[in-house]
Length: 549
Image 1 (spheres, rainbow, N blue to C red):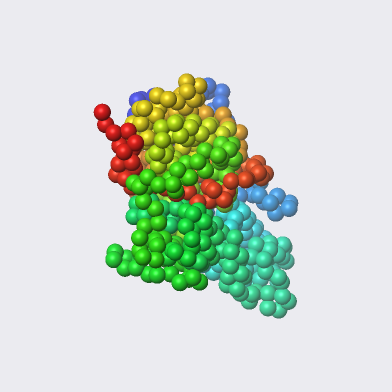
Image 2: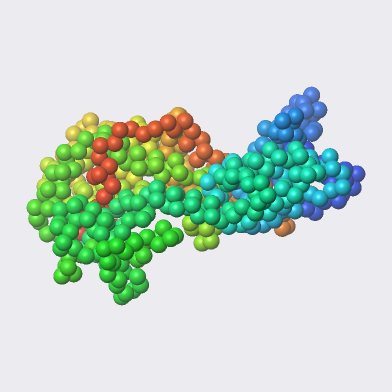
């Protein structure tokens, strides 16, 4: 927080153009819209007064008033495009990114329809309608596919389309906007029935296509406390999943069954053609693969050839190729992620969990890569091979950083730093000096001191495209949320929303200029990571390898 000249603690502000009150000479509207001089003018030379006197900082207002002022400040050029200042563009972007914090999508749709006027003055009405439409196009452009399946948006666009269609006689200039709306929903104009086209059918077709191409992370438990993290398409059936798990575990599929734990004590034996995921892309229950006699597929505490083969296979992998496989998968998810997911995840997760699937998958992937690193090291029975494994993971982490994938980079370093692995003193003593030095340098980037300054400085210097460490980004947004009130006297605190929007825009910046992926030769391996997710089991394995003195 800044301190003013008088030493009073004030809230941070940002510049936007001066918003005129509804009545400049009175106080009408002041209860619904509050503004104050920008603090940026404090301490400036008096010669700059003429410049800053027309610049104000938005502090708070009702959602309806903010929307009204956004439209009032919008100007149209000859091609019916908007010509706004940088600050107004920023305010519009902030509003459209963060509106879920203070109003529902349904409320925003109703507010926009309310701003679509029925005026006697045809010229004034046309200009107002075009401004509303330009704001809608900006919203749809900003949210891309994110809102396509929202039922409230479908109803809103259908209502708006009918209003525009009815206005075409008096306002022929709206024809281009009608065509734009048709394009947005891939509608083909039909002469007399064009305004009655069903958006529902089109949405269903789109949803089917989307679902067919969507990959999800699926946890398939092979013991009570370890699972395979499998990357599968969302339409996968039990037989496909069982076959993939059997191949990964080197066990004949004919010996295995797939069981879903649907509630404590409840078990559902999945038949070969049963779908594994529901329509909401959630698994039908906690999935377990076990032998037909209900015995476990693998016992991590038993010294057997399977564990020896597992380590040998890992040691043959090229470290750059492993990093490429991890990065390619992370990029597939990250590229499909919308910046608004951060806001829904922080503020509306219990209502809109379906909106945050890519973000949740990346968080899950980060957690599972960390557990995978720990599992591989702790299931390696011999000292010399454990040393080789740790050297490999240090190199994979360095490659992930070089590929600007900070999500997997952090996961690997955290896995090596976890207590169950870091306590293996005999193993770490055997690590060559140059690898210890490299690991120390990589560790520095993950140092949490000074609010992760080392990571922030390093990440800032990286060019886009790049994948940030998402848990820290969510932590930043949570701190902004908990440290600032969303409402002041029932007015939206827009300064808080501006700070949150800045965090969300980081996703957009990181996704810029992504043209393709590295050649991937190891996705078949990294698509099925075997991890132990029980900390007690991990520590037991650690103490078996190197007992306490």
